[in-house]
Amino acid sequence: MGVVVRRPVRLVAVLLMLVGLVAPVRAAAAGTSYVTAEGTRFVLDGRPFYVAGTNNHYLGWGTRAEVDSVLESAAASGYNVVRGILHSVKGSPDGTVKRHVWNPGSTADSSNMGVHGTYLAYWDPARNTYAFNDSEVDGLGRWDYVIYRAGRLGLRLNLAMLDFWQWAGGSQQVNAWYLDGYDAAADPRRYTFFYQDPRARQFYRDWTAHVLNRVNPLTGIRYADDPTIFAWDLMNEPEVSSVALAQSWMQEMAVHLKAQGARQLVGSGSEGFYDGRAGSDPDTEPLAVPAVDFQTWHTYPTYHDVSPAGVVDLVERHCASARRAQKPVLLQEFAYPAATEGARRSRAELYRTWLAAVHANDDCAGWLYWRLEGKVKPQPTRPHPLDDAADPGTFVWPPDNGEGFGINGPTDPAYPVFAAEAARMRAKNTPTVVDDAVVGAGGWTYSDGWTHCTDCDEAAPPVAYHERSQSWSAVAGRTATLTFTGVRVRYHGVTASHHGVAAVSVDGGPETMIDLHRATKTGDVLLWSSPTLTRGTHTLRIRVTGNRNPASTGTGVTLDRAVVE
Image 1 (cartoon, one colour):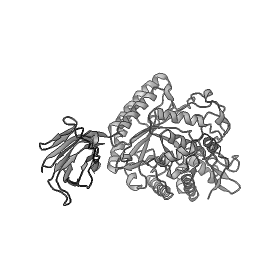
Image 2 (cartoon, helix red, strand yellow):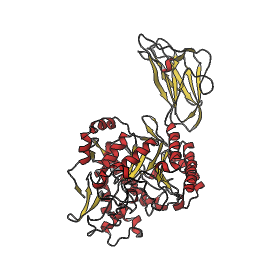
Image 3 (tube, helix red, strand yellow):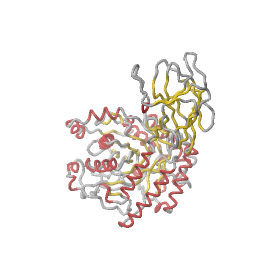
Image 4 (cartoon, rainbow, N blue to C red):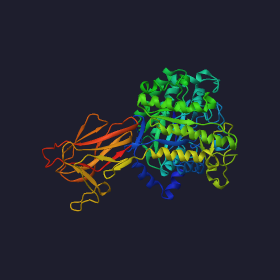
């Protein structure tokens, strides 16, 4: 069991309390709903929640101003999710008892792995075991502000519990705690040890339990209960020697997260290769790992030997897998390199093509690109808290790290493309309302025998209808039909003591009997919701049966509106 190091200084909490920000955030966050999964879609408050957003790798160690720069840019672009990774892990404090497999002392800027002395887990020589750093200055507590700020901006966070890669320690540093002379870049045990060794597995259980049970002093909410967190990834890009080992580990650890009371979704963070590479298998994982709520995939054509045009084929393939499995799939990372202005313009159009494919397929749950960057304090950087006081007016766009993937805010031609495509994805989260008074193309078709009224709200007793109108019939066999394009439809009507039974069906299927009788007359009542339908054109029919509840004094059937998703 790791030793938890707790630092008593709660500098950020104190400062924010002084300016009166803590209490309002607690109240706002507590009233926010959780995103859930339903079929191939994410759902929020009963409505679709298609994801459009980005990744950023330095949220957990960037200065407060750097965090603000990224999150404010994401919010201004209309994103709804930002993904990050809980970094970093190191050896013993000075690297002598247990050496570091990376350079935690780098003075590069935040984007280029200058972590300002931040670390979340380390080897404690005094106890000869691992320990956790909870400090709000240079430890896990720095995430308190990230979560707080994201919630204030209306953003959700997708957080990976750990990184597979050694760039900031990750699981490779954990391996090095136990394997003398371990080569984090080349040792073949990098794909097995962490997932099999009892000590490494226990570290993961302890670490994730520790994260989930942390209470954020800025919000008063336990991480496991905070709806600002859209989802947890078990790991960022867990690469494993075999599909069987990967799926066994994922299932065990996803169950563990949920046993700790995590109320958010759980994903694997997998790269989602189809050939079994890195332990991935999108076709078998949904059934083999039922505790994982959604599937993920990452694509870097220049690294993965995929043509740019081939990405569109992968979009269709992954979303077809999602449809068969009835689990959402998220394109969680993607990037294409660009080193010149001309290349960046071409890349922007390439991204537009990829995201158009995601948008067009309703079985694709969304996208997060790699990666949005904000302005950063130029190097040399210093350990926290020194750089938290740095003047943001001196910050610069970070130099490229050689990959050519970064999107430096509005300086990159892809930036407005992502904003426009995010708006298109968000539009899918807004249902279409068809009032009863809308007839003809895009509206209702009524048989004869229906009565319509407009501006007919009632004052005594008060009854309000949607758009102040309603339609009704008490003649058996009369129908109202609506042809719509979507995946679900909801029927709203008017209930009253003299109303009868309606028969509701979709596409000529079995009818559902809906009793509209209530003691009190009420307008715009949700009476029936369809199951999730295949995306396409469907027809809703409402039929007057002529039947009634014995307590009713009439057989009238009413229509106030339909809501199409």
